[in-house]
Image (cartoon, rainbow, N blue to C red; front, side, top):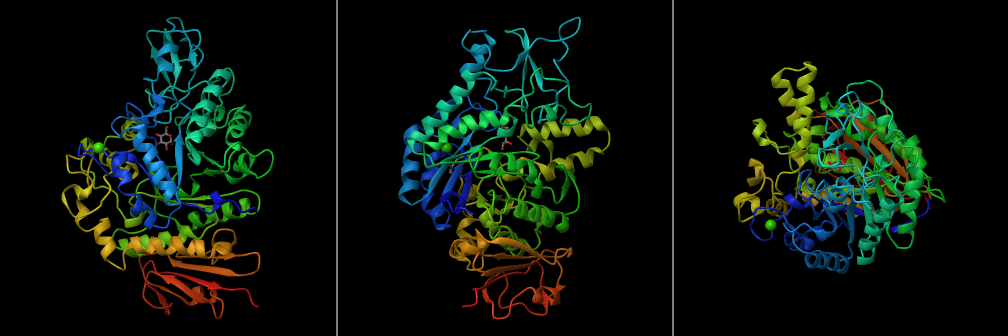
Amino acid sequence: MERKWFKELSVYQIWPRSFCDGNGDGVGDLKGVLGKLDYIKSLGVDAIWFSPVYVSPQNDYGYDIADYYNINPEYGTMEDFKAILDGAHARGMKIIMDLVVNHTSNEHEWFKKSAAKDPKYKDYYIWRPGRGKDGKKFPNNWMSTFPGNAWEWNEERGEYYLHLFAVEQPDLNHDNPAVREEVKKVMRFWLDMGVDGFREDVITYISKREGLPNGFPIPVMRGMEHYSPGPNIHKYLMEYRQVVKDYDAFQLGEAPMMTPENALKYITEGKDQQLDMMFQFQHMEADCFMTSYLRTKFNLRKLKKVYRNWQHKLYGVAWNTNYLENHDQPRVISRYGSEKFRVESGKALATLYTFMSGTHFVYQGQEIGMLDYPFKSWDDFVDVATFCAKDIMEKTHLFSAKKVFENCAYAARDNARTCMQWSADANAGFTTGKPWFHVNPNYKEINVEAAEKDPDSILHYYRAVIALRKQYKDTAIYGRYVEKLAGSKKIFAYDKVADDGSVLTVVINMTDKPVSAAAAKKCVPDGAKHLISNYKGFMADELKPYEAHVWYTAKKQ
Ligand code: GLC
Ligand code: CA
């Protein structure tokens, strides 16, 4: 496998609105980030990925961009951004931008001009007349991801426009070469400024089947088969690839519903490669059916199967990403671990994914073991996705009102968007003003300041595993994944084997009960060096709840 700098990164994701407020107006901002660069660096990470910081009316919290060339005034100025870019680079950290080009905000100039049929912009979006006698029937039966119909009527233009996400997020028409030129211009602008890569938002949706035919008459995600992916996806991505080739930068595509087989069509290394890596979602479905709104019990074997599949199928030909949280996912301890065993399970989960092959991601707050928010009523949510899900669940009449609420509270993206917990001070030290969103009431106990003082904290453990991942990179980052105890519903165990035969061995009890260590012991080579555990000492006859260990065995001389 070819070694590249971006394969070795541990990346810290910032969702700017809730990270740190630098000016006391209650909203996270770039000044706040600037003041935390040393903290971020102290984690041992090598890069920061910014969720969108561009001008946006914030209908989807920045994923609805109104101007790709300027910073959202609430977050600061371009000077602030450049200070972060320089500050990060000076500390040896890269900066990765979110590139959201499947759609813009409906407040973008392009959209306004397109609605007004300005000749230059009239085909920048996907417009269709209404059907039927009254001309008001939707152009086709497609649904949007934030459930509901994918079409919205525009009075000025007298036509419908397509939106695969919120009504305020009209889809750009990438079939129009002028739109593709705009995208390239945006990419060059940020690359010229010195950013080191892009995380490309729902990039596999940018090509839509010509004629926009009806989708299968299923009640969810109708039409998806016509744009996920569409016929020109590889061609368009290849064009965008050419832009990045001129820079020492990389591209990471977000890819909903992706399988390893399909991923290889995008990320196989070589001349046809369009993206360096992808965010897939299958490993985030071990406690649900397809979507986290349809909750099931956490199923370890389901999780193992996904890792087995991705680690094996990409090995030697393409590159994985490893994440457990982001701004769209509830907190992983609350999902795959145990709030009761917060510290133990937080460390177990850190162990589980940090030593997999792939570029490594940590989401703000994950490193201190932040938990889901205790939502009490519908007024507690702000995310458009939650209200759409509520609506569709109610329409199915399959769930009681209580169950609809429970499902939404469990799955809500708002869980990940509560204010970062910096200290036990007012508002968790996030702001001196009135925070724009909830602070989890557990902040007095769970915060960065407390974690710094506690040598056994999740925070210190993250630092340790991030450092080990680098120190043992031949195995941890580039080694071959060999699963152990595949049939076990309780223990997650694997080896990472380097080309020279050195082995890193990971063993984790993924349950909240003690389990016999007899089988696990057989996985550990004689004479292996013990690297880390979330419990004191070596493995005894029993693994305690969420007990995790990592060993290393150097190749025999
Ligand atoms: C991606 C983003 C998500 C956003 C959506 C539409 O999935 O991660 O936050 O709502 O795309 O842009
Ligand atoms: Ca602010």
